[in-house]
Image 1 (cartoon, chains in turn green, orange):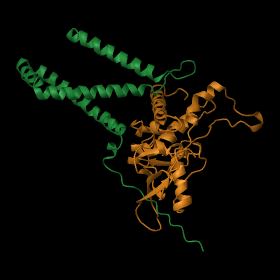
Image 2 (image 1 turned 180 degrees about the horizontal axis):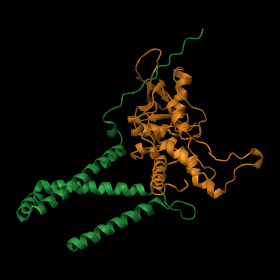
Image 3 (image 1 turned 30 degrees about the vertical axis):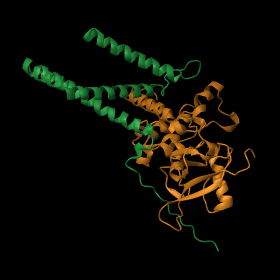
Length: 134
Length: 252
């Protein structure tokens, strides 16, 4: 005699540390986190503008803080995340081929490379414009 | 058999689940003889034939086409028929059911939610005019076929779902393979159902939930690139939305 079938699907609990299991998951989490740092920098710039509006004394106090060691460290961290944010963003561009070359999507290296090259060129042009070079 | 005559052995740790006997899965270790030409599926077959006939797992073609034999091997979703034991460094080799799916028994997971997702993307050619059969097939050039060939190679092995943390977080997420299937029909010159299909997939639990982890494309054994497919669908859905906003009277 056949025994009755027991159907009892087991759903595995999900670890809160799932992103530590694979270096690419970790990179993804850092990429997502980078957005928060980009927003933080936008607020810092707004703060700077606010200080500028407050007159010379207010801006001087701001600069004292701005060039302090903790702020330099924070800015270095933000720069790191901004670079990560930009590079991972440009890496995405190759996934959406907007045109084809001889019936094929353009090679990923070409699309990503061109985007990064334009990004670097524009960043350098802005640096030249504001500070006269690196 | 190549070798020196002494039999090498390999230890495997397999996640077992016997719903009729216990409430939770448990690990069981097996030590089996091993040769360089053995894949993980061969090891499972050896255990079933010689040690424990109750071990449950799916397999069929043994050549990377049927998409049945997926499992997490040492934490990574793999087709067990295409993974050589000799290429695995860790001991014991850990074999578990595909991550993110409910386990039915041992390595057999519940694929029903996946099948529903495939159906939800309307994976068929949609035409406003149903041409009578006697007028023949809708024709297509080789170049037009090339546009969607990559997405059409999916074998529904579900490795991409096992690799997707977004799906692990929200089982309602449409997910990688179903999205790639949607793009396959989007790119098909014979299909005229883009409006209908995009409306079905550009939803909260649809393509917009993808945060582009990209691991689905890494584990895909057929180079379908589901992550890329989802990004292309997002572009199409966004274009459709912008057109509807800017040119409300234009035909879509």
